[in-house]
Image (cartoon, rainbow, N blue to C red):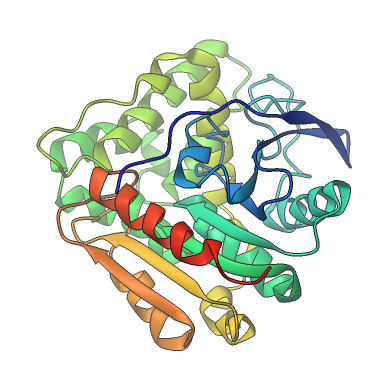
Amino acid sequence: MSLYPQIEPYDGGMLDVGDGHRVHWETYGNLDGKPAVVLHGGPGSGCTPGWPRYFDPEAYRVVLFDQRGCGRSTPRADAPAADLSTNTTPHLVADIERLREHLGIERWLVLGASWGSTLGLAYAETHPERVSEMVLFSVVMTTRREVEWVTRAMGRVFPEEWERFRNGVPEADRDGDLAAAYSRLLHDPDPEVRDRAARDWCAWEDTHVATARDHRPDPRYEDPVFRMVFARLVTHYWSHAAWLEDGALMKGAERLAGIPGVLIHGRLDISGPPDIPWQLARVWPDATLVLVDDAGHGAHPTTNEAVVAATGRFAALPR
């Protein structure tokens, strides 16, 4: 089952969500279709026009938006004096709810990938009555244990690349919180220090997901604006473990009872190991776990097929 053809948005705009932030949103597909919202990864990746291809455009009304500080939302996190104090998980959860109200949607399907799965779980556990179904892939929860895994333990898999990554921060910071150390560098007054830190961070990001033989570097990292936005937001969120109490999303999964879900994960995903969705599926009785044998982290042809199958299955369910 392949992705649906690319389509153009039929509506869009900028929504004032407070704190000086304006969030860019777009809608695709059928105005009278089943509502669905897409939560992109990163944090900081922004939404791209390819996301609606996971949905039948005749059956769904698909909502895309760029989370605070990235994509076409303003202000962007790459500004030298960018204030990220009002860019946290609770702020993003509130933004999703404000966008739902703005669009006059009662309930919607939530689709999230990677960081978007963390955000999706946080939103659904806060507002379960507003979620009809969930489709999450490359499932993570952004716990301190997971951040430590990606920024330090993954050095056992990519030792040479990790050593370069670690050595990108001052020697005094190399045995501590590497996400926090990079976050400080990314806010350094010297633009050369900031740029080097963004390059080093994104080089490591492109490495720890590289488990497939045909992996190609992400071309977005060649863009200095994208690099800075992405690196600043990821390190900001990771150094605070997404402002979530340790284990909160797993403990809160009981609030998802009655919400059908599909958790899709690559068995070869070593930057976000499969035990995370496996454990979640055990405490969320309405969720189905799909392990994709030949996939790693992120979009993959077989993963895409599983996502399209999930949205197709949910298209016929009541709103």
